[in-house]
Image 1 (tube, rainbow, N blue to C red):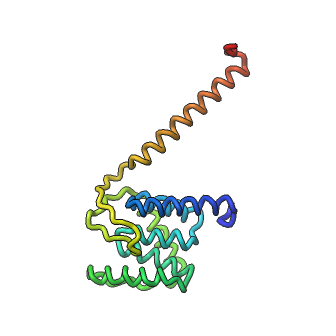
Image 2 (cartoon, helix red, strand yellow):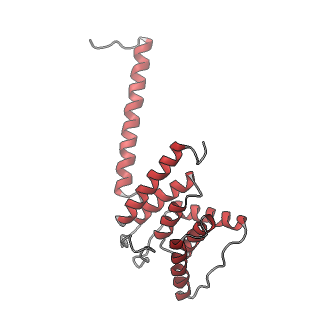
Image 3 (cartoon, rainbow, N blue to C red):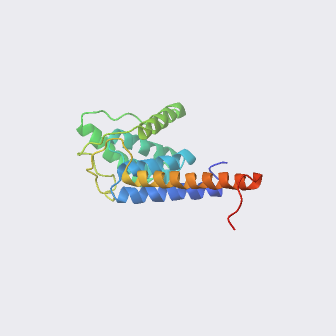
Length: 184
């Protein structure tokens, strides 16, 4: 299945929408996971990269996302504005902004580094910068790398439903082989 597949595109849109909702609710880590999942399905999705930049806590990571947006859409004004913000933040920290990656190999390395970082548990700083656009409220919740309440609920329900499905399959097999009989 390719990224042009309508089913994949619908899933990507759904993941981006969930990421946007999580970001607007101040759940930056959850938003990053949704957006990264969308990018796993469609690595060239400009909207996902743009929103992912907006939920980064580190200006360097935001800059890398925005550079990817500009590789895909060189005229994107939001990315240009966000890139200026990220570079100003890096300059204020005394870090020289990295030059824009010229080679596709360098862009792939940055993409892989971002994926690895986003999948690793993090402890977020209470002084994390606000989102690039100002639309996403900052989050001051302490992170321990553990699953959030929403994730635990989702995974618990998934596990319970999977267990019920397996029980049903076992009962069906037992009925078919005649090991048990129907009640009425």
